[in-house]
View 1: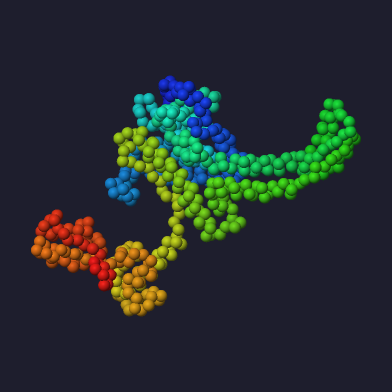
View 2: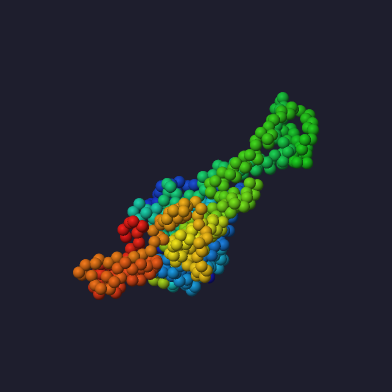
Length: 494
């Protein structure tokens, strides 16, 4: 079934109106503004350097394990008011993109492509009878080429199959998720492009170490002869030398030369400083990705504090941006393909950033101390709790004169100073609300009677004065001039 759907897509694309090669001219394969950056080499680099493999693999595995959901947007715009949708064709597609890929494998594959090349490509397959997406396939970035156009900006895409055939794809059949390239608006850019030279250095140093042991376990030298050797003599000398001295088992054997003189090339691995070279290159790779060292399992200089900080940094600055890019692709490119059934829906992921328990505990302690001090100077607990950011709590005890206070405050300090000193926040949040009426010949009796009425919090005040103005019992209706305001400080007007 999958082959049938994908084959139908490719056949339809191939038989559709072909993209004129004349309009692409020399820009085909390179982009209108950029140049070929060796995308295949970037993909292959993952298997050539251990540090790079660890970083890309850790990112891909973490993104693949994130939980996703489909929601119907709330009118309030708040996430907590959304309704989760458990049955929808788009959700089924995301959970099982095709019969060969689960969601986790699909996301992991795309994350590898994004980390190595800065691009993730999805090709949409449709049934010919139903114009909605039925399958999604991840495609290697080095097999996809945007086809630019000077008028429409983008005509479509060209897919290059493993056997070298070119297949034209429509824009609506392709979803591209990329890190924008600064000079090529059609392609993406990844960290690997910035460190290809460093990756080569790591690989070459590893190969040098390997050849060091394969070739006598020491650097090579020269055999100098006084006369020109015939081909047979040259081959005999080479074969005898390799037989007696090549390989780890033959290291440091004494060489016996019938003809010629051995000239040693004296330099060692210490001169090449390979350990330092590989260590520096690993740091450069991590810096290019912004990858925290503790997440690679390096524990030589890691403690609990910076280990937890590294985990939060990994989730906040590496995982979340990629997940947000995937969410945008799903919401703004995939869901619109479902027409009216996709309107008002949005995909979202579970935030992977771990909670900072220590910081939250410190904040809770500070808020509790502030609340106790404010209540001790005579403020209403119902006003204090929301002012310091604490939830409403049922009070079952009695206030005492020995309630905890802030010793830094002078005895004559007012409660306003207590708020400012303990919270460092706007003291207005802790004040009561008061009704203000324009008392003149046009004022009605209910408004006059309620003038000066105080309320414990804004919710209570707005119940009588919706939105902050207009008394609900005013006989003038919408013409009411009354309002409710926060009570001012001592000596100040309202």
